[in-house]
Length: 502
Picture 1 (cartoon, rainbow, N blue to C red):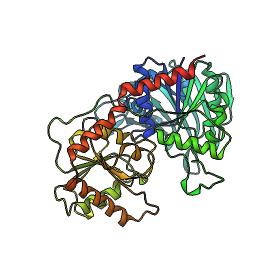
Picture 2 (picture 1 turned 30 degrees about the horizontal axis):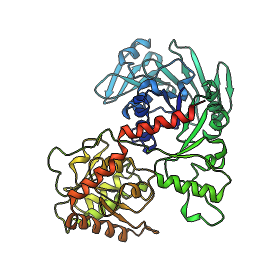
Picture 3 (picture 1 turned 180 degrees about the vertical axis):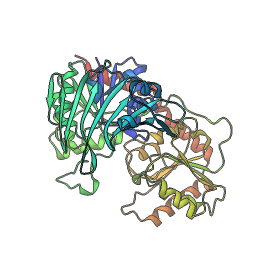
Picture 4 (picture 1 turned 60 degrees about the horizontal axis):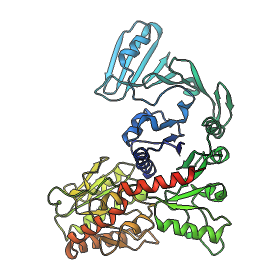
């Protein structure tokens, strides 16, 4: 029996889906459940091993679609500059090095090689670009061996990718992509396919699934149809990670599903179970299936995160300290929180606000902070492991208007923090129990920034001036006990046993 968890990509600043999978992987390991985590997107900027290890996955849990058809293992990159020099025969004239980039010049062959290192401190090579007669002709990508090569040809003054080859450990070709504009042919020793969907279908068949296997579909974009078509005789579960419908379009007769879930919901009769992270979403989804469809699927609540234990401060929490943690993306609205803290600090001059995370809004946040001379009390802290960080603060802020669960909210209450956020499904309504451990702000129909900022500022002031922080901390700890890892692991084990029982 194996549980296959299917996702698309993974990065350094991963989303809640990848974090949910990481929690799940630990639960499966602790319960002795054989599980694989499958990533379907092409990844070239990093070795996928580094990305998955960063979230706590073990290498033997990972399947990457693009090396699945080879005998390569998921493993760290160990290929060095010395290995590279030894592999290329020619008269080396000059070496140039600038941080993570090293260039080797071979004028006798009119070639230069550019090696991109994993980091500045080590001579570990991630990829090498070969330029001949002024034209990019090849890129080699390395792990403990040469993993794959991209081939280029000059066209209209630019380098055009026309082929990728993925290798076995002995250097033989195991899998190829032949690329012509928007058309791609995929080829292995026993397969030729003309679409990514056909390749995924071939992959599913190669898994040789049985009735005792379980496939958990975390993301279905571009993969859903192939998975649905080839999953049997295994059981299929679909995870609902976010808001699953568009509230503004609901009528008595119709509902507009979230595009990411429309295919799965439309074909709910082929799904053995849907998984939601909160009871509130489970109940609403069941009601909507009954109202708008003929489907009555099984829906199970299992939290997408857990707490190994509760975290208590070693001493006193930093007075008037606030934090938020998320991707710095538009939909997280961290800019509203920054502006709210700036307003609240006029009343509470000791406020300190730390922002953890990375993303596209970082430059915008810096500008707001600098424009308002707030650098002394609002700090961008970047992406960090926050396990032991939450407990040093007094209050957690969130401005997201929709959280399928909210892992950072769970982590915050697991360190006893009260929270302030919108009265929004589903995470906020699960983890913020007003007035016991925080305050909720009515979810705005229109994004009137002035009203929103004022509302957050007022709640911050009220909490510090009128609430009992000790009582709020105690209530958050009490609420968090339900989500201790031992309890969540039992839920996963029961679910897997139910799904895979013959």
